[in-house]
Length: 263
Image 1: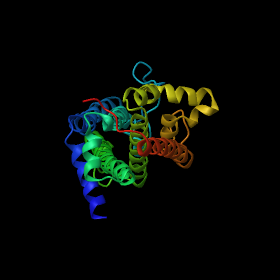
Image 2: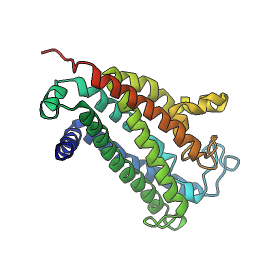
Image 3: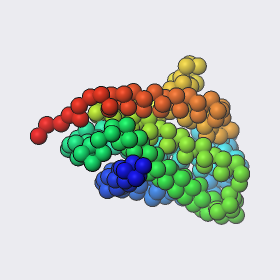
Image 4: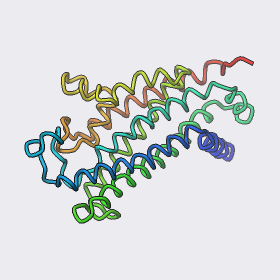
């Protein structure tokens, strides 16, 4: 057990020492809240009761109710997190990192689960920190029109949890696909177009579209003004199945194939 704990610690250090960790962290923890400030200033200028009918030149859709304001900005962080998971997964077979790891811990089962747990810890930390900061700063910027920035509301906290769960599961999915194919391009080609509304487009046009991972994730925190219905149970189960399949497949190949790499 001590060796397993040390393996997890080693993987955590490995993830947090990468440049991609700091770049993604800056994007979701710094840039995303800045976008929330910009959005909040726009809401203050036109008023939270503005509609597409009263402001057709500004609004394409209705402003969500107060408890749900800010979660449209949270969608910005999906792309960096997907990139983060794919790059971490694909990097496992590069630069002979696995050879070094397996010299210290020869049990591949423990190594694989240590990598997944390390990514889970890192993505959970980034997700909750970024999403809470985004929603809190949004309501600070709204001033008297917004919720209390620290206490928020029960609905807001629920949606923070749903949004974080979506980020975490999509990060793990991207990691599993990247590790399976030893290439970050594959998960990005599969997931990034879905992040850029292709998933929602398919979900609105065909019923099977809701079973795509990004569209299923969007069901977790769909607000009343979104085109998709808020169905967290369905969305969570579908997305979890995608993640389990990706991790099981990557686990099977991890314990059976050579670590690869050329000297």
